[in-house]
Image (cartoon, rainbow, N blue to C red; front, top):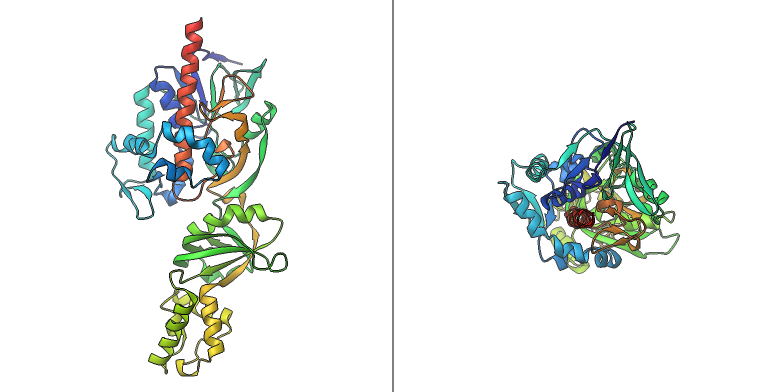
Length: 431
């Protein structure tokens, strides 16, 4: 067994979003910094974010960004969000020549041809500039502590790395193939931390009945997806809604709307939930009714499916009409008032099915993790173990889709790196 001494430096476990920023910040303060990553490259999960396009953060005042999190999470994030803002992170990228653009919904992306790979490359350049020592294929097996103080980590190889200042940024358990397999939670539990139960967040929804195979890949643009408790439980009670795009998969639905409602749906399990979609969210019921009636009068000889195909993709027009109990070939002149009412009701609330599962392993992030009460939000320092700092998804933080979770990783990582470096300087000064 070999041992390396980093007592007068900072060791960071986890080379994802939070870990890279933490290592960069610690080293930028002149403190020797070692970054350990279990995979053979850094930023593996960043590479798949936004479908590889990488929604790096969200635009706007940090107070607005913070307000998108649940109240307890928003309170916890306040100090770090003001210490390291979305503007500062954007500058890290643009200072290295990357162009970014902001969508109307506030989501910030690299300008093509730049993508997630280039974001990771820029972060690696910052690590190199700061002098961070990076070790890949360096899986940590255990976090070591004695007398209430961190004293190092043991790698899977048996190597021991001694340190008095350790940052754990190993992520959660979503997309385990990227390396986020929940390693940090057992370590933290053994050190006395409270773990909030892990739940899916920003995940697809698996439905019953399963959608037909030929629906897979079909999208609805700018709709509202609503989740309700199943009628057999609390009739009609709405859990959550989200506006955006909806994508059918071979098991259910995904896309921003599904991700947006998934946390609340997952929390409702084992109670059942149904999901329904409003395909014309900007038009009230009366306006949609007038649209249908107007079409019937203007085109009495045309099948009603012609109207529905202007609202949803052609492949879905028949199923939507079937859900409404309307024959797709009914001509406008023969569409009864009852049929029109059922069609309008379906356009405004098309029931897609009952949610049978929200797959934890397919979520972009997970909710749950180390309880926020166990961590000082001013420093990301553990309240249980001296010399231990926690940041990123290992904490019980899960924001909505839109770049919010990456900003939480950047900000908490920055504060953890800064505080750990200050701790090293204080220790050295005391010797």
